Amino acid sequence: MNDHTVLAAGGSALITPLTGFLLVISLCFMLCLIAGVANDKVADFYAAERSLPTTRNALALCGDLIPATALLSPIGTVALSGYDGMAAATSASAAMVVLLVLAEPLRNTGRFTLGSVLATRTSSRAARIAGAVTTVAVCVPLTVVQLTVAGEATAYVLGSRTPGTALACTVLGGLLIVTFSAFGGMRGTSTIQAGKALLVLGVVTAVAVTATAGQHRTLTELLAHAAAGAGGPRLFHAPGLRFGDTTTGTLDQFSLCLTLAVGSAVLPPLLMRVGASVNGRSARRAASRATVMITLYYGAIVLLGLAAAAGVGARAITADDPQGNSALLLLTNALAHGTSGRILFTAVACAVFVTSLASVAGLTLAGAAALSHDVYAGALRRGDATDGRELAVAQWAIVVLGVVSVLAAVLLHGWSVLFLASFATAAAASVILPALVYTLFWRGFSRTGLLWTLYGSLTCCLLLQVFGPTVSGQPYSLLPGADFHWFPLRNIALVTVPVGFLLGWAGSRLRPGTPAERTAARRAETTMLTGAR
Image (cartoon, rainbow, N blue to C red; front, side):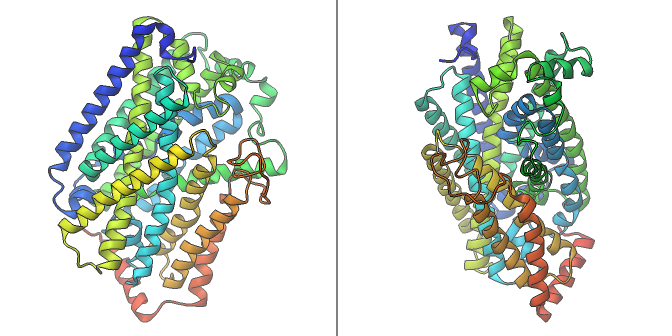
């Protein structure tokens, strides 16, 4: 039992977060059941019949961009590494700039999965299959990471850090998510994501105001107190505290910022969310509003990180969790005085829980859509599948992906899953981004260039990640006792993003598109300019 839990307020305090969790689960399940009644067609299940209002879609986009790791990890990173953490938070908020550029042309394609968007340039089944492979390669690792973090955070809030409790919370969370995704589809997950965004924005604002309203009346005072609690201003306010001030450390920090800035914007759930907009203009407006929300969110996250460094201290945070993921809960617990404090802690606990549920539900739905719509209906049935059959395949795919992710999270419990998060986000930046940019904006992009981008860049990401320090050779590695790494960077996007763009260009130049592909490109360009229902 950890002293920094809600149980510190007394045994009866456990009732409050448990009650909050049960209310959240009941509400989410009810919303998914209501939404699932209308999911009798493919367009309903995958894209909510492309009828999501702009504001609701903006909130859902904001929710998609705030997974559990983006709620817990950045606060600890800012508290422990100062300047480096603030740079990472700024880069994460910059991801919306990329989405703003892509949102309208993406929606105008009239497609809602990566494989189907890429197939606008070629009728080849290989494009759909490659898109599905990429989607699953990104979604499954991220799902495992989210489940692991969610299980540990939920066990922490309930007052137990034992492996058995965390595993039970992970399994329970996974089963709930499978249920929500299978019943709710896009309409249900959008409703949960929108509600989650409102809850998280309200909670981080409340904690930030509470934490800074006392001693830290100005930003200057807050920065000074944070630096005093985290090693002094010379280290805290200068780059290099997280990765070191060596050349390798500087490149690693830049690579991380690049990953967050471009990888977060093209994750498969976001692409599906854009496809659920009413039209291209609505998609662009939703992305614009989500940009404002995300910017405000990460501004509050930086304030919370500084408040955690000042009020809790880097030493206490590191002693409780070397990765800093418990910084938000430690800060909230330090502020939890009296009934209002317990209510605030419960609100934070519920925000963490619903964030985990919503994020994994979106990832699972995106992965299942790739398997059912791109592989089954598009590649195997060649567009000949009935709506009922495709929906059944999608729901079974959700179950399979959910079970596989839960099993992987259970097997990796107690191990470092940093490599999974690094690989998945880098793959999105290095594989999905080049493929989308070329597909949407370059008429000369060919089938060969597409496949080189998808498979070549994905292979490059896998090789560099496996032979990097996140897998072996360091205390934080998956296999700390082994050392077979030769690539020095933890974050690989600095190399793999240029490789992805280069492979797409080289493949298209060496083997240009056929006349049929060029005709498809002109047709796709016309559709993107005029819009599609």
